[in-house]
Length: 514
Image (cartoon, rainbow, N blue to C red; front, top):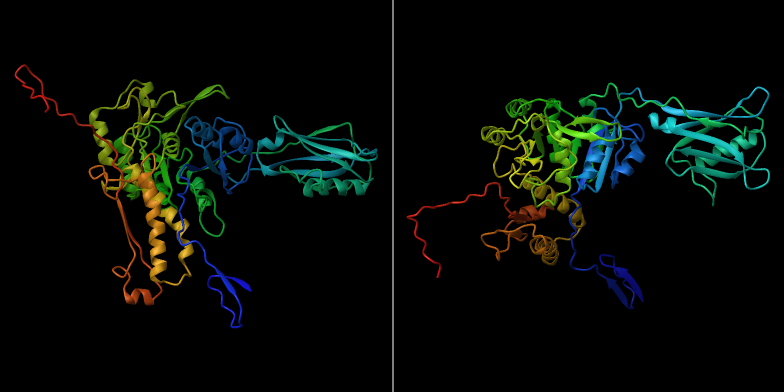
């Protein structure tokens, strides 16, 4: 008896063969839509490498350092995201190239002390300067213990390091870099190199790391944008991270908008940007047109900056409205809109603090110019919210944020889930299975709570169609190895205007409903 998988060749010898077939129905899980990818500066952490899926501000500060009063600050943006219920944050740190890693040296007890080992921080930045190290006696006789401490965090320790003279220092370096089997792993913060000492270690002195710098002074918006290619920097390091909302923190250079829009289309990311502080709706609209941006992947904001209460540094700071708008979008389900949704963590905007409310004409101008802004009050009450929820697309059928989110959600879910079809033999049964998979996905979206797709005027009518048969797969196309599924989906509509037709007066007569 033999057991083989479907598609393998059957034996020609007499006997029993059991062929295992995979399930005929495959089910699709929708991709997560709450991933918010951002690019900025920090005081710790890898450079031009995405750190994916951090869940809160505390995790972000552990990786990138504390909230700092400066432009493009990652920790500040993370605090805003946290206050607006974003649960999946991805960051890329950039520098101006002047960043330096902190270091310290461990010395021996010779009459003229010599260096036993150098410890160099794995990451650049001033957080490295907060580390200290000490060598003490180990628990086992004749051994030593190295402790590496960062204030507020669990220390790294390597106990029972054996050896004398140069052998000890080699063992210490190996412990830091490779860990001690069954005891401690390699350091997550420093890399060690051996020095020149042949004497015993100093066990009475504590060593403090120094020399770390952030490299943020000359960071520009162009550096946030970065470059694409085999080595990706800045925004392009977000490629294939799965984030669906993007923000180049405090980027206000309109010449970067087109690249953000193009990258967003390719990766399924809704990027938020803003004009320089003080830019009006009209000025922002002019900059948008000049930049040649007309895409559902980019959401431009006027330069009415938001004020953030920085309790860490004891100051109020102005932040780009894009940071707040990106946060509320990432925390909102894709079939919904960020329109009229409360935004938290701001104590005002430039306009609201000056008691300068937007006029009706300005609101209409924002719609015409494909520009959004944050203001209070909102239609739903006295809270801050985005006021148009529009992207930069000129087509009215595409310029709502729900169009961006739902289109990316469906398209990139299918792109992620349907790769198994490649390499299959195209048969009637195979086509039926693919149709069933797609239909099940859309049926779940229709029947889910909350409902994600549908036609409100025909609530019982199926709001999608999948065509995969001979009508759209010609003989010539099939012969070339193509299989085509034509999919149409009706999105739920977002209420942007609520119109009440009212009639009143002493002459009005009411006919009671029967």
